[in-house]
Length: 508
Image 1 (cartoon, helix red, strand yellow):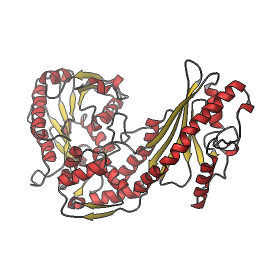
Image 2 (cartoon, helix red, strand yellow):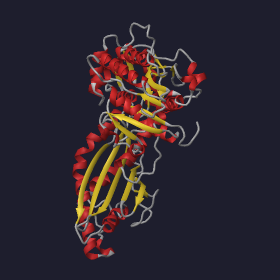
Image 3 (cartoon, helix red, strand yellow):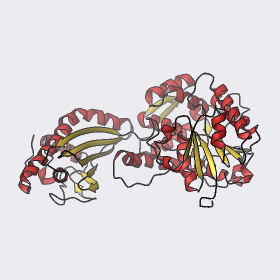
Image 4 (cartoon, helix red, strand yellow):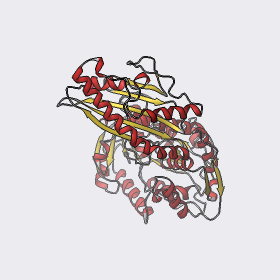
């Protein structure tokens, strides 16, 4: 693909959705000028690329706003559908596509509409209503005078995609499950990275215009195999899957709504879509838009890795991580991204204490200084960790008062060190998950400094969640008192303004 600002302008509808929100920065990187049609323009402001695009207020059901948005555009992406819709969603989607098609017909210079549809054999009597509607939208768009490129995909794998989040929550939360027969149905999942690649290159390939191109990942798998691979990638024990014939799509969606954060209205079309084979049967995409897609395992590994790491990036200031299209975005719905449990405490140290004083007390924690409060409980946690083969508290620390990234600190390791603003420790005790303890410090305009202390935990499987809930009573005993003790010692340090103000005697 040619780099530079000469590619012209493209319109993206559905820019605040899962695919659209990730497509826009890819188009910008490819040198396109991007315009977004948004029913609520303020939603676009939540994306990091919002300052680099034009936004037109409107809706695909309003011909006037569609024509305004399309004016001056060489191509348009149609990424609108009623995934979680109920009732007459097919009629609404059909009418919206017809409105967009007719409005596009009168726009000079518009050479192509690109639509992301759904795989599935339209001759299959069991094809779900939502998959059938997605294909119908493609046909309605193609009836117009502007050539349409329809890319048909099945399950999209990437952190935040509804299909991936359903898979992730089911596997992580249920070591054994009764499942409908559709777990044996074949599908061809595709990484969001590959979907975005095909969407971008389609806009610059004349051979793609007026074509229906089926796209998919490297592997054809059943949903049961998808669950097995996810468990392996996430280092979970093998899940027991028992198919039964009694679970209808409605019952399955209600069960998904109970076990996962996805609402049943979204779970049902996902389940229904898995009841029919959704695999690539026609291969012209390989000739028109040649590309080697990721395997299913590679796609899951990327999504899982992004869940673990980008939760840190989006939750903690100062993380230096490179994001990608598989990452969860701050604008994704609440059920998207990795499960990150937290216990947050906030307090302040009064003047004359400063941010430097607060950070000095935080930096001195552990080792010979101890953990300031409830030493018996800290000792017990260390002894328990040693008993199960962990490092315990015996490692201490390299220097009693100074830290650097990579230092061992009792059963923690320093992951981020930015004086006097941030200290983050990563747990190295044996856990059914990953844990961090973090302090953020900021000076107050009126004097003194604020301390935000967070214990964060990314559970692994059902036991990981049980571990967190079992420890909550101990968190109540420890973490609030710890934040208060740190602030108190910073105030003592501010008054004394000397090293003797930092007591090394642990306090109960």
